[in-house]
Length: 328
Image 1 (tube, rainbow, N blue to C red):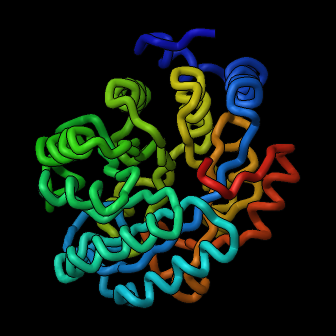
Image 2: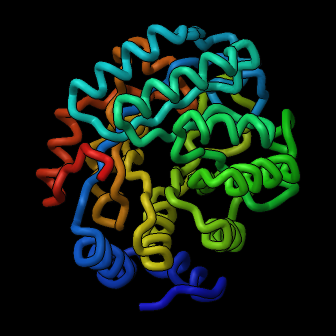
């Protein structure tokens, strides 16, 4: 099965779901099973700072949301949690934060260096930096940087991300690739104003950018955000179709399986949602290193609850996939 053009993508996005399940979903699962060893990749996630200067209209951690209990872990505490992840056997680490201008960049470099010294594959999502800063992160040991373009439609991006611009975001993506970091990037599926044509353009942009990881997710309205007043959640079915399309288009791509199910109160820890995503071709799940009481305040979306090793083991068992903690 080949999916290459916008028209071919649209045909899948508009396909009856049961037809998709028996054809496209099955093919995506086959590719991951036969070409990637049917591996479920486990990554330790550490949301070390939920303070953010940005006012993204869809994000629960936006600067204007006074309901969020803010925290900022210092360098020593972050490194201690990295040690916890290493002791649990994790070989992959995802360091993620709000865009906090008061978090010292030197501290971030020291954290990355400590994680790399511990032998970990290090992915970062800490916001927009300069070209030189991305170089410093790469030299400190960072392997991958997550810079989501969120939406490939320029007008949508600029309206929904008033603290930056589409032009600046794409420039930052170029910096990341220029420095030799692997690029993780993707979209929000089904935000108010999104449609199949825009989703197809999003997918084609991911292909063009030669991403290493697609952290795609359906839109989930967050409390105290302006966009929540404009419409409900994005389609889980469309998101699953996108996961399968991405697997078929880019066979070795990492794709986030931490997805919601039909009960949005379960957030991203939904057994149903995670398992469906794995069946659709996704392969990556995360275990929060922070205690649940703190992890839930990393509230990009509502009802976020931390997932531990037991959940990952359950997902591996239910999906028939092999759980892999090490990076290589």
